Image 1 (cartoon, rainbow, N blue to C red):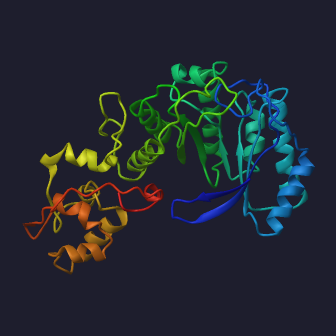
Image 2 (cartoon, one colour):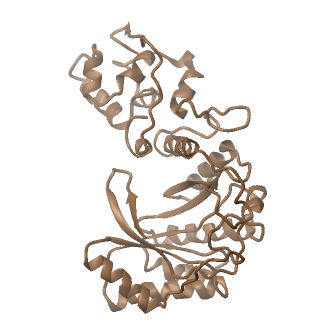
Image 3 (tube, one colour):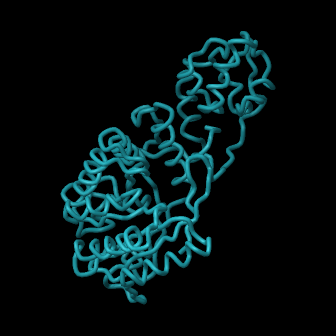
Length: 351
């Protein structure tokens, strides 16, 4: 699979996303490759997979490798095969490009370290925010003893041997009665205590011939709102406790998390553009980090008194105008802006 990975600056990188094998000893209820599911099974020898990737790489189809695996025989055996693939690429073919390698649950520390010395990024999928939710998805796995402990080992390696692209994890959202509040509280802890580069959220999609095949799929908009809220945690100094959730503990789908927070904290608005600190500007819907920095720089030499001036600085004025004043003047919105869904929003500025 050629996977178009999008970076935080909007750049797109084609990765060769592949499993060393889809032969699996596990029976995760949601997984297309679960042991009891009738599907074609394939296993690559390390040399075979390395050669296949290099062929794609030399043709310019891909610029990096995203290598994972199902668990065949044991986690250590499967991780060792991935490690051999990486060694062939790095040591025999002198490949110096990007490699993201998954660490399987339960793998020995020595294998994690050996893999880390050859990869740019390591990750392990937590799958769920706690044991209760994990038991719905993967009842044979242990959240604290197996998954979180594995992530802790990876984070420890990253602390002593910093990975160029850091450490990430992924959560499956919407199949296990999980709440956005507990998901984002976990993400906040992972960013703070484990120095994770990213937490990824994957909206659950039922797979035929699995125990969860009749479950409802997770709305893509919920995944999108989680990414927006995650962006606020990582880039805007919000805390999970500040975010606004509905009675079920989920983010509102009809408005983005920053707007929901602002509407619930109207006593903090409007802010005066000419004197509001950078941190206050960041709290205004429609003003991002880049536009806030531009405002702070430009107002030292120029009076900002028209919405058009803000627009030229990158501010989404239709969103921001009800929350700011310019030289004391208030510009109330004529009507509530309709929500617009841009799938790249959480990577960019207009939040």
